[in-house]
Length: 442
Ligand SMILES: Cc1cc2nc3c(=O)[nH]c(=O)nc-3n(C[C@H](O)[C@H](O)[C@H](O)COP(=O)(O)OP(=O)(O)OC[C@H]3O[C@@H](n4cnc5c(N)ncnc54)[C@H](O)[C@@H]3O)c2cc1C
Image (cartoon, rainbow, N blue to C red; front, side):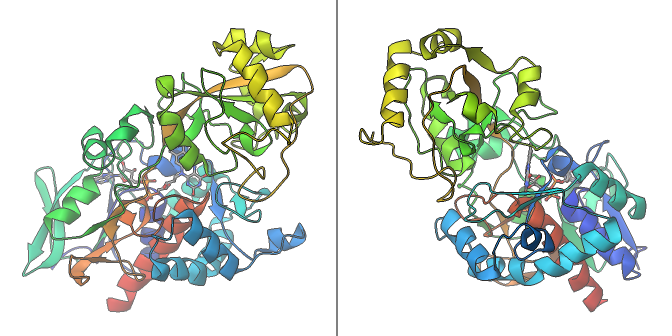
């Protein structure tokens, strides 16, 4: 007989949501976290959640519905995402969101358009506060890395962590995050992405994938990894310097002064295109009109903050800007001319600011700016195969008894790319689902 009804591995949003749900339902839960700090990638994230049909959208006159949301996710994922998981997301989003508002005091201060969205659907929350509220109700045992599952006749009964073991629990929830910090797994599944700046939670080395594979779990979409474009080359390990000025109207050029990607595409697709450029670097180039669209305090759109930290280059003319940035000056002038003159379309094209929405503007107002940007390996899309009810599935599509998973460790949800806000969204929704599912079986 175990002291616990469930063991949860990982203290990010997925694990803490599962644990809080179990605790609310009266279950005895043990949460093991590998690192001292915990929080994983969740704590480093921008705090954007993708929801459809919210009061915040309605208040801003944004028409959105679940059907459009599912279509956007399907298109963004290249048609590869599991429709059952997408449907489960929209079906359970309201319950999870409501719980976060009512029990954790979540407030959304901004709603904006971002990668993969045909209408503004990214809702911004204070992620530090959200984690704090979860920690208020969920005790976490830190610096305990789960190293192996204990099984009995195919059922997962507990875990080993270092020299200690926990056995006899009714369920184990795998919420160990992705593998953005694993050189080995990136090398195995998506070696090209090793050229991106390593990022994400320090403990996110794909332990959950190894643990689950050892008990027969199937992996899904692990080769579809995409680093996020555009963080400064000097980005430190604990904080990102991501800017998406291209969704405000900037263009992106390489060192040769040439555009190489349609800037309205998702920042993951742009990241992959940037990895093919010399030095795996691109430059977000814009004029004063775009600079004026900076949104102070809004992650990814706060040009002023990066400027105040001396990271944005500025010059009165394009040739001067190019020289300062180390870009071919003649080519940059030609590129901007062609971009500004709609009758001189180049091969790259661009019809909107972001994913079919918003109108690109000519870059004509000095001064001009450049933000040197590299792809940042923030998160991974693939992982263990799961059912909509969070059971981990084997290669025959059958549940592995006793084992559940939620959050970035899971695969099949995103397909080949990611719509902003769905990683935090899925961690919250499916963390809750895992907790409820286990309670139902107790
Ligand atoms: C810079 C950045 C910005 C982002 N911005 C957004 C955003 O705005 N919106 C969005 O939707 N997504 C965003 N993401 C992605 C998103 O944050 C993650 O996908 C999400 O937080 C994952 O939550 P999780 O609970 O599954 O994993 P995590 O939050 O990573 O938590 C996993 C935890 O498990 C622990 N762990 C690992 N192995 C073990 C083990 N063997 N035993 C015990 N514990 C273990 C880890 O240490 C970690 O604390 C961003 C990511 C980054 C890095």
